[in-house]
Image (tube, rainbow, N blue to C red; front, side, top):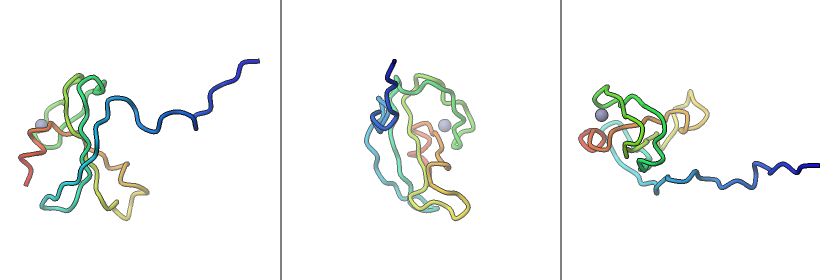
Length: 90
Ligand SMILES: [Zn+2]
């Protein structure tokens, strides 16, 4: 009988995720996590320039420090940005 690994024993964080930092922008506080290129396996739409964040591109993912009342957790509001677009954001 095969024993299936419990999902509870998996690492909490996927490989390639950097550390999280906070950032204060014009519209509030955000949590920012840098994503290594090797960990960027999907294409995302950058809200800053409306261009694609192509797979393999190091970038940042941000979400609100304080979740909006309409969402259960800020993780539902994650957005992927080009690093330079995020830094240019007021
Ligand atoms: Zn961008």
